[in-house]
Image (cartoon, rainbow, N blue to C red; front, top):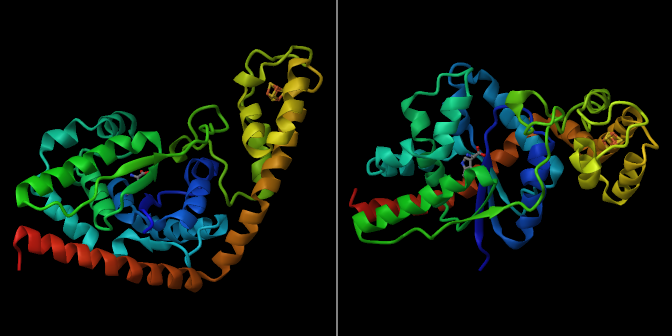
Amino acid sequence: MKNRILSGMRPTGPLHLGHLFGALTNWVSLQDTHDSFFMIADWHAMMSEYEDPSRLSRFTIECAADWLACGIDPEKSTVFVQSHVKEHLELYMVFSNFVPLGWLERCPTYKEQLREVTTRELHTYAFLGYPVLQAADILIYRADTVPVGKDQVPHIELTNDIAGKFSSLYGKAIFPSVKPLLTKNPKLLGVDGRKMSKSYDNFIALGDPEEVIKKKCSAMFTDPERIKLTDKGHPEKCNIYAYYNLLKKDYAPEVYEYCIKAKVGCTECKKNLGGIVTDYLSDIRHKRAALLKDESGIRAILEKGAAKAAKVASETMAEVKKTIGLI
Ligand code: TRP
Ligand code: SF4
């Protein structure tokens, strides 16, 4: 029997290259070897977007289009929206009863978000419980493997702690132990050299039009020590070179050469990169545009996915209720 994976993304903005290399390429290959569940985590998105949730439905549809365009195949994987499967919240409630506040207050992601996010009020009841819902997402499908970024590892550890506490309280272990599966790809930085993120507005979106991509590439930060054309560059310190390495590996040695010998200037190097990124994304961009022309098609895929997911989730929930003694 195949191992089961579950992973998710919050539909809070456009998907970008960071999602592609950090998660999606990995997910696409995992679909062949694993029983795969991919979830658009709209309840989790609500925890930060509760003041204006009206944009979530658009981001949800676009997120699904991006996934499909990148090669997530609804015939192989179960693709669905979190809020369409009611059992996530039911299991979240069961866990909420016994998860100690200390576990959540100590969680590094929680402390970090409270510190860093200044545009939203996150001192809320639900936001503290973010990892409890995530544990429910995973355990409701009894997934044993969760492909995530390094920042999410504390949530996987909490998931195991929660499953452990469930077993010790109710005398039966009905959940598997869960392992994070980290992507091997190096992190792709944003156009300003910081982590690529929606909140920094430094991303190249999968759906960005060609001119936008080219403009973003030409404005990228390069090796700060290479000021004049005659200055020799340090490709290993340059974000542009990192992009070449990831998007067009064959060509990277040539870039390295001309950079350290100051044969080509950064402006030209970035211009070339603009072409490479637009080419790289061209197939995805066309597929997502075609998919978005027929929103009802996307909705139908998500509905089918939710039905498949609900079948598994309701079985787990029935066993949970039996185990804890609810009628
Ligand atoms: N917390 C994840 C993130 O921000 C999204 C997510 C929600 C998730 N539920 C999940 C990831 C379950 C993996 C498994 O990236
Ligand atoms: Fe970076 Fe290219 Fe300039 Fe070298 S030539 S510093 S790789 S942008």
